[in-house]
Structure formats: structure tokens, C-alpha cells
Amino acid sequence: MYDKTILVVDDEPRAREGIKRALEKWASGKHRIMTASNGKEALTILQQEKVHVLLTDIRMPEITGLEVLERMNEEEVSPVVIIISAYPDFDYAQKAIGLGVLNYLLKPIKKSELIDVIEKAIHVSNKKERERVIEKVIDDKLINAFDQSSQTREPVREAIQFIDHHLKQDLSLKDVAEHVHLNPSYFSTLFKEQMKLTFSEYLTRRRMQRAKELLITTRMTVSEIAEECGYKTTKYFIRLFKEMEGETPNSYRKRQNKGVSII
Image (cartoon, rainbow, N blue to C red):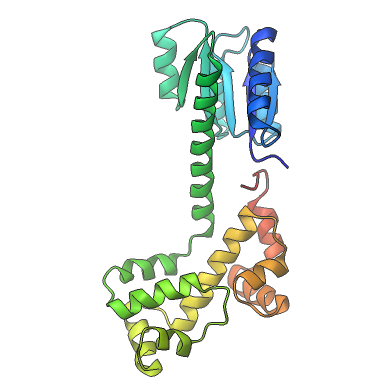
């Protein structure tokens, strides 16, 4: 399975194949390198495949590189884009930057320069994927709790860190209270007062958030995710997940990952 898909678009066969060979040698099988000989072919691939990095010539017959970018934006297709051109055209470059292009390379492209820019594009792509995951797994009640936590007293802040680092373990209120050297009853009251959530609700929501993240970003089985999130039985995890999300973990994974590659 490939980590990323990189699409090279150039109407010049020699340039296109040269870039492809250089990238395949660099990728060593880790990333998939695809090619298109014109803008129309590129748009078809972009509609059918999840492309993470697009490297396209700017001047091509019929559909130019800029027109490809404009149509991508209309359809909300969002790979990281690198423009290549044999012409140092300022107007083209300025418009490309306005369309969100990461970089503008002039032909002939040095191999070291190409690899450097592609590695930066992969980094940007990873960052965009992480941001999308965060948007998908966001829990408003946890966000509000985290906002509250900036004003919490030290024992509760320490408790939150301890919980987050031990989600896989069988955590009880008593365990966490002992860790922060407080009486369980007092800790329970303090936690709810400071976080606006009970200890139990915070722990469950945090585990569900972690479960959703793993469902989107990994190929772990539901049983493995249940264990990773601190649940002793898969059956109980699935029931709890369905109660909170309105669907099973597998249904959630399929819906969220539809048309999206796993990081």
C-alpha cells in the first residue's frame, strides 16, 4: 500500500518520464507515481483517485495547468500543487500563487531541487490530513472542557495528562485520584467543577475521540481499537460507540474514509 499518490502532468513525454523516473527512484516504492499527458487526462485522474501531490506543467494545449487548478478548486479537490514551466512568466507565477500553489519550478529541473520540493509537499500534505482528522473527530464538549482546563488547578491538569497517557489501561476514578494525591470523593467533585464534565464522561468521550482517530487513520481492526482505547470487550466498545455516534465503528470508518486515503 502506498503512502501518497503523486501525479506528474506534462505534455512533453521526455520531461514527464524523466520526472517520473527520478521520483520513483526517490520513493523506492513508498509512494505511487502517476502521470498524465494533458490537462484533460489529469482532471479525470483527480476525479477518480486521491492525489496528494500534483506536479503540473503550466503551459499545455487545450487545458492549461492553471485551468486544471481552477477546476480543482471548483470541485474542492485539494492536492498540494507544484507548478513547472520552461518559461519564467511572472503573470503565470502570480496567478498560480493566488490559486494556492506551493512552489514554481523552472525547467530544466535539477533532481535535487525536485526532490526537495516534493518532500516539502509531502510534509504539507501530511499536515493537511492531520487537520482533516482533527475536524472529523472533534467533540464540542471536550473542546469546552479543554477551554476550561486552561484555568484549572494543578491537580486536575495533572489528572488530564495522566488520563490521556493511559487511555489503554483500565482507569478508575480512584486510580487517577491516587496519582494526584487526592481523596477520590474530593477529586470527583473538583474535576466536575473545573472541567464541567464528570470524570466518567470525560474518560468516555476522550476514548471515543481516540477511537475515531484510529478508525480514520489506521487499518487496525475494531477489536484492536477497542483494546487500544481501554475497553476489555469489543462488544461493549461497539455498543458504546453506537450509543454516542449513532452508528457502528465500521460504518463510521466507511463513511469518513469514503474517497480519502488512510494516512
